[in-house]
Image 1 (cartoon, rainbow, N blue to C red):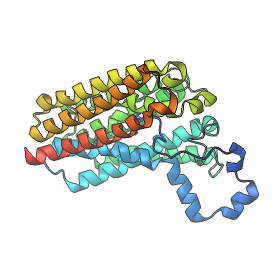
Image 2: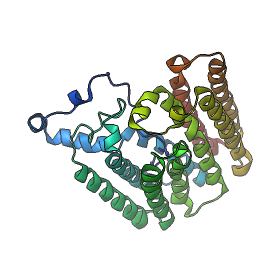
Image 3: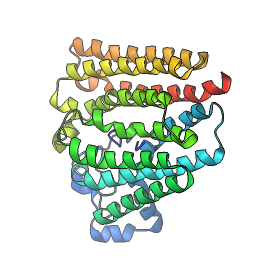
Image 4: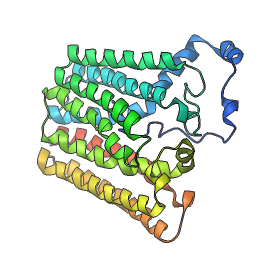
Length: 332
């Protein structure tokens, strides 16, 4: 679900390609232009964009496999569909409200200035109402059709992402994505609760995997867009610390991520499929982290470090690891 992010906790437009470096004002249509271009389809696209679908995709990657693991087989289709539907709404709610909160800095950053609020495609008031409506509907949907534990997890993720990450941490501390990432870990617990009605050590280990994976994933993206964050005065670690420190801390979190992924093997009684995948993926992930460290120690700086290579690999790592989480119970 980012809230499934996130932001996992996660800085939310991670998958948006580079935007040509043109003056911000050229991206903002005049009232007459907006009226001329407005169509129902354009309005729908703008509201969908507020939910940041690409981030939701990444978050849902962690939800479905956990449901397979909780069921130790194929989970009931109605449970999967309801969890996906309301999980998508929950993540979309958090993302839309985040767009409302961050509309001032989004307009300053190349990577985010095409968002609907930055381009005045949706008014701030309507964006906020849209986000709150999704939050209410998703929480009620989980409560009425899934179970109270899943509903509580969904509501907690929304509130944490909005009030703790977006309002309290993001603009105040370089550790914003570390603790803000808790919201992005919640889909793991929600997926498990949707099947079992509770929480256990197994989903908590997977919660730990996503929590530890989030900082290096986000920091390498922030290395690429360091100037953006500096202009917007968002104290991401790459803005306030040296590249060497960022890479060193990212590698430490990468080691912790791999170690936590291996811990699932005995805790959940996983089979050889998961074990082999976790070991191989972990080795590749760590090798890329060491490549970054070697480069920064050699004096390589900026885009020449190729931090986005690590960022994209981290996406692949998480997707394949959780695929193994889903497949292993079917074979073991």
